[in-house]
Length: 191
Image (spheres, rainbow, N blue to C red):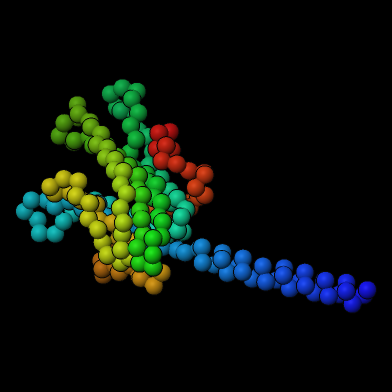
């Protein structure tokens, strides 16, 4: 009887341990970090190199929305109207195979201009991009939104390291937040 109980306990223990090991191995394959780099570029007539309008780069987990909000609302100097300025985006990255990823991106960028030579004028420029594309790890993909303006999207999977030119020094401008899928949707742009 004691031998039977001991044998049952050993079997239960072995099953529990083997299930835990398999479960732990499954979890380790689910968690993967990637780096997403987004550059907004504009070719100015007469200039050789394109002008970089924006270039956030951050790390995220696969299959988790990445959210960045570096913006605010400003009031017009002429009336009480409110305008969004800054940068906001939600990105969702899904792994397709060892070097291919699907990117879904909701991007918003807004700015305010008040010309010094014309104090009776102010204007707000806002751009919004919704995109879904497949990216190869380490290879930039350009999304042309006009004849002289485009988004350069690059994803770096594990083992691929983003390369910075000598004049690019990473500067933290915001702390991105990775959240669970149920916590955030693109409708949060409509606050």
